[in-house]
Length: 80
Ligand SMILES: [Zn+2]
Image (cartoon, rainbow, N blue to C red; front, side, top):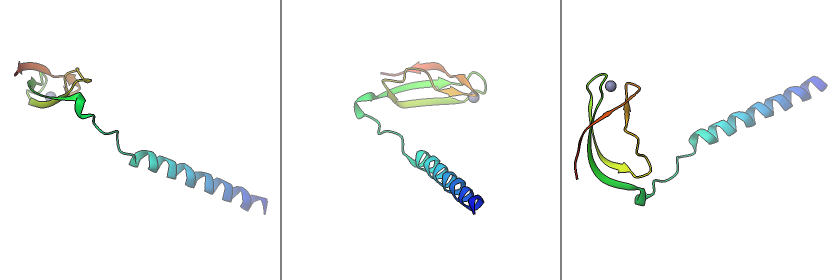
């Protein structure tokens, strides 16, 4: 009888653990603050593979260049 009780306790613990992980995974990221994004025109190139990227809207709190091929991309042109 005691074994069944332990099995039920373990089962419930696993159930709650999985539920908690699922809730964490399904929680959306926080909303973007419109005051923290500005329209820009920044052209980046990946020095590893040559991919070019144009950034049209950037966050004022994120000043690092985007990454590609695990390397930071090189800014090739910056508009107004
Ligand atoms: Zn690349």
